[in-house]
Length: 138
Image (tube, rainbow, N blue to C red; front, side, top):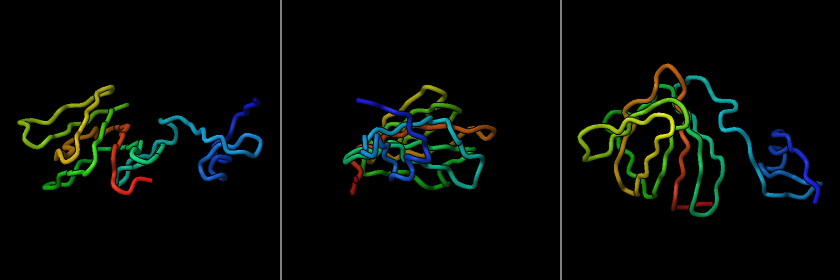
């Protein structure tokens, strides 16, 4: 079998699917740190992979937090990993936020209320999030 490099613009022309001699291979890839967005009014969410029952996304924060008085209360499990930067996540019922730095991860079971109370204001905080069992998964 012959393989060849696939440019990202070529992958985009084929709906995100790599092509090998005109046939989809289903293999995609890239660099999670490529094309990081600059500071903006909202966090940046990019789905990297999705299949029934699971979604993997990159989240980029620049000093973003969960709005005051708001809690995430998701109907699915979530695992998050800080790849770069730093953050603090408060889990309802815990006395203080959990500080997270590069390499720290957290598993949040469904309906465990939580909120992001801090991300680094002076640089990007890059998260990898894996969502399990979302309603209406692809």
